[in-house]
Length: 107
Image (cartoon, rainbow, N blue to C red; front, side, top):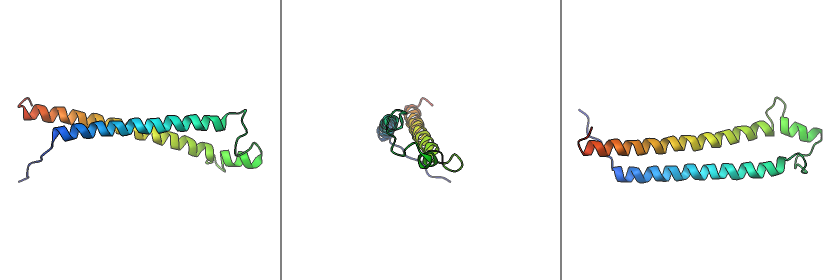
């Protein structure tokens, strides 16, 4: 026989808000990073890696695995992390609603 599970809906609601705050912060970091990178990568600027053979090797790599691919993967990963945190926060909020209804005899 299993034992009961106890959840504090108020604490879970606070956790949902904190999770949401982290998602917002991750998106803020992503926005800042995109802005900084855009400044460095603008075609008219003096790009730190240069436009010579070495610079092209740095940006494209051997098999399209250079800086550009790494940058794109990092940005996509940050976006995915923020989205996952949003989903966690939504799930936590939904759980609070269900638990509150259950405690009130509504489920």
